[in-house]
Amino acid sequence: MQTQDILDDLKAIRQIMERARRASDGFGGWFMVLWGVIWFLGFAGTHILLHLQREEAIIWLWAPLNTFGVLGSIYLGIRIAQRARTKSSTLWAPLLLYWLALAAFDGVLIWQLRLYTNGRHVALLIVLTIALGYIQFGLFTHWSISVIGLFLGLLAVVLVTWIPAYFNLGIAFLGGGALIGGGFWVLRHGG
Amino acid sequence: MPELDPVIHQPTRLRIMAALVGLDEGDRADFTFLRDLLGLTDGNLSVHLQRLEEAGYVRVEKTFVGRRPKTWVWATTEGRAAFAAYVDALENILYLK
Image (cartoon, rainbow over all chains, first blue to last red; front, side, top):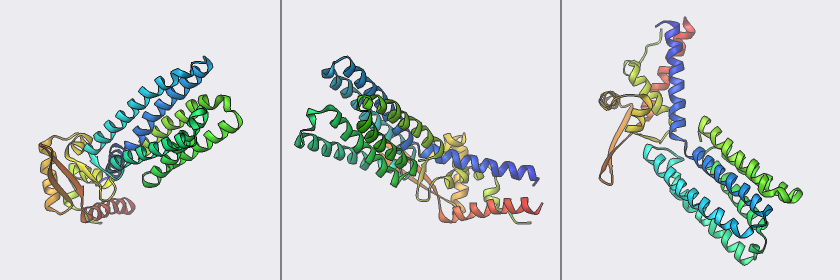
């Protein structure tokens, strides 16, 4: 074998291994991109509606967005599980149940602590819960997802403490942007 | 000069092994996932998988999801070791040249 042939073989091996890893482990990445887009639209829309003093319309913005997100997540989970049975692709069903449990937990807290009287507190609780979910999911899949979760949690606390008027807009651009950017990063590097 | 494993040395089988070893240990690939990833035909992939299975480098499991047949493929521990030895041998040849 010629030196160049060996170098070409080694390069091809590395490329195929990388492609296989990326193609099979795209669940976390696509999940983040999907929810990043929903966050961007939802929180930016909330900021605009509050600015226009149309608070009653916020629920009509989030309800279809969340429905789309849940259906999209189920679709992604089924598609990935059909392609390659990997650690992250087999996680999707328990993961869905985990998110539903977190949502129920938030619902009880909002109801019992009467957080529904303050929209910003509700939003903060939901963002922090989701940040916690990402941190935990990353521990079982890819560390970068935990980093994104940590960033989202810190971002929410900083915004609500120091610039509360721009909480929704900040979460839309920085939180949604971090999810979309992080999602594409995970798709490139595996997760 | 280190010897190269003739089963893995065949270019298509080398690519199949690289794809399967690229997955984490314990992970399985669907037949169609592997076919699309490597740009092979069903027949070509089947023939090479059979050869790799005979060598004990991969396992093939045929199941049904509902009424649809599904074929899972994964690299065995022996296959992973053979692939690592093959890559080492390539690197050694490069080093000795």
